[in-house]
View: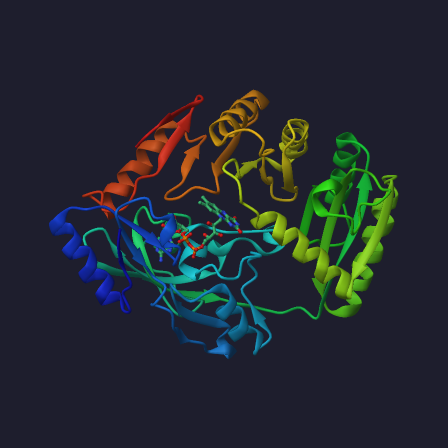
Amino acid sequence: MTVAFPQTATEVSEFLRNLNQSRQPVTVTGGRVEQAVTHSALSLAELNHIVDYPARDMTITVEAGVTLRELRTALMAESQQLPIDCADDSVSIGGLVAGNLSGVRRYGYGTIRDYLIGVSAVDGQGREFKAGGRVVKNVAGYDLCKLLTGSCGTLAVITQMTFKLKPVPAAFGFVLASFETWGEVEHALTRLLQSAAVPIAVDVVAAKDVGTTFSAGRGPLIVSVMVDGPNDVVDWQLETLRRELTGCLPASIGVLSSDSAVAWKAALDEATTKSGCPSSFSLSCKPADVWRAAEALMAADGHLLVHAGTGVIRGRLATEVSSIEQRLKLVELIYGMKITARWQWTNQSGPPTLAGLTDAEWQLSRKVKVCFDADGRFPSFSRLAGGAMNQA
Ligand SMILES: Cc1cc2nc3c(=O)[nH]c(=O)nc-3n(C[C@H](O)[C@H](O)[C@H](O)COP(=O)(O)OP(=O)(O)OC[C@H]3O[C@@H](n4cnc5c(N)ncnc54)[C@H](O)[C@@H]3O)c2cc1C
């Protein structure tokens, strides 16, 4: 396999122009070249500088190969953050945007799409282009930042990004309530909709999937509610949530703050990121359907983290069967639920397999692909519909 490690956007552009002459396809990667699905790979690992960090403006501009760890270290010095959860801090920022990663705090903070205000990229013909800018108030032309977020290397090579930032809150904590049945969980989730507190994350996880920290002797399903802010506000919110959820008659209830909150948050991030098996998936449905979908998946021995507030379920099936069997089982399960859902595999090399697109959405996606990559230099996404996989 040929791997190129460009150090500037111009080198990315030259690489793609030369590639065009030889008409080979290329996999774009944040550094994990072993995941390349084509003979030629373009690693952004050496395009790795923090370009500009005007902390007072609360924005930062970075190249695509900067890792999440490097970004977090730079921001921490100014008590600022990009509030996107990912336990694996070796991911590149280009990969984070291209994969549209998100985690537990998506409920309160949104996704990377909400923070990306400027992007520089190179299309399949090797043409450099920019969208947005380095300041928060900058709205002109098509919002290509949103289009490239989640594009998984199918449209263009992202070379540089500007993000707006948030301050790091003084404190955060969790209320954990465990329940015996999904019916009880649904009741608690409905109660949370009327809460006087403002949670930034509402998740459900099986006690068996998060070790013994909180699970011993409690109900099998844990509702986890996270809040953050100034110390006194966090204390008030935790007490309010504890009182409200106690009214839902949980098998047990507890409040986590300080170090135990940090450990629990790390466990949730780990569960979100865990994608070490072929059937790892992420499914989005209406929050009102989430507990029904989760119940069906868990009954089929799924290991899940349910972001109940946003309707996103991440998980994997038991690993004793082959990858094909696992995937078929999951496809069958999801179609059997008869809910409106979109889902994708999250542990595959190359571009995503999209499911749940209407024909019109599919046609539009194909047209956009042609605008950026007329010659098919980047991998195509594929579509899964009606239980059959159709290669684009
Ligand atoms: C569809 C999908 C969704 C995922 N969702 C999550 C999630 O929500 N949370 C989580 O923790 N993990 C998630 N993962 C796991 C994910 O693989 C990694 O956490 C992360 O993307 C890896 O970053 P990386 O820098 O190693 O990128 P890679 O693994 O190299 O690339 C990830 C994807 O982004 C593309 N890409 C990388 N860099 C660029 C660039 N500069 N320009 C254009 N495209 C680029 C690649 O072609 C590939 O499609 C997901 C994986 C997939 C396939």
